[in-house]
Figure 1 (cartoon, rainbow, N blue to C red):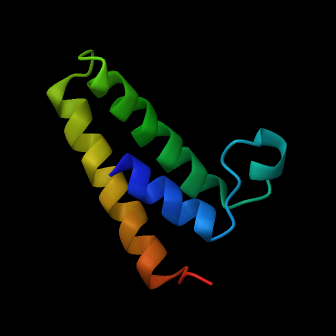
Figure 2 (cartoon, rainbow, N blue to C red):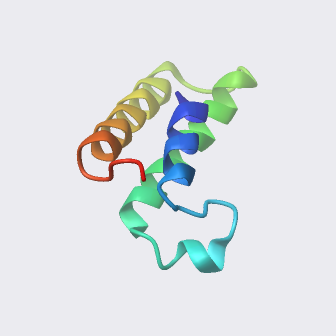
Length: 74
């Protein structure tokens, strides 16, 4: 989910690796992605709480729905 949502964000012009540029993007979208991404990273390392993983899945799902409904690909 992390990789898919990241690719979708990048295809829609979000610059996730450039913090200065990213500040001009929709800050709530980027904050939600970063939070879910961090939990995904921790889960891969075996360090995430199951409740946090569920929150990350919900966050990724919400971002996915936002991207397919409100920010169609170019």
